[in-house]
Length: 200
Figure 1 (tube, one colour):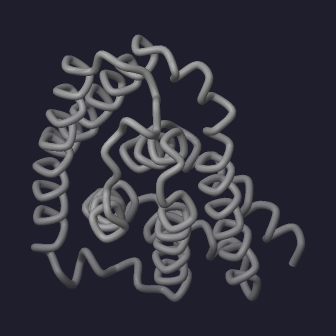
Figure 2: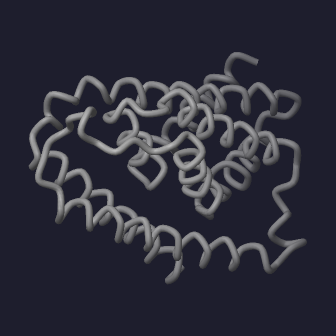
């Protein structure tokens, strides 16, 4: 059981650690110290649900519902493109550092809606959690749920570490150039992922 759990933990971390739309959003919220707990919970909780779906044997959903994949792919690409434009505008217009008192706060509902969209409209999350982790779990017959538990722990560990660890970089992001660079990087990441979704 422990072997399967550790395998799930390390595989989960290896899949999630690369910078992506979701991770960039969590980092930004962590730097702003705005709704960090709920953002991390939505990201990790969503992963837990999707991993459970994969472990339960519903990896053939895309085969049963052939229209689902293109809807997710193009819908996700559209959302990421628009979010990238928003980040680029922030990068070009930004002329101040991270001063929380001066930054307009977003409502919890608005923040969680964006977070959910970045999570559930990204087809890669289904490939990683439902398809890949679900398929690899079959290599641990009778211990699939232990493997899944390890992967879920990886998501919670990563997102909460990223969200709350971001505050260590706050002095760096007090400089306008750093904040603009992050926004520019986020725009590039969003557009890169959107491009890959369209030209798969």
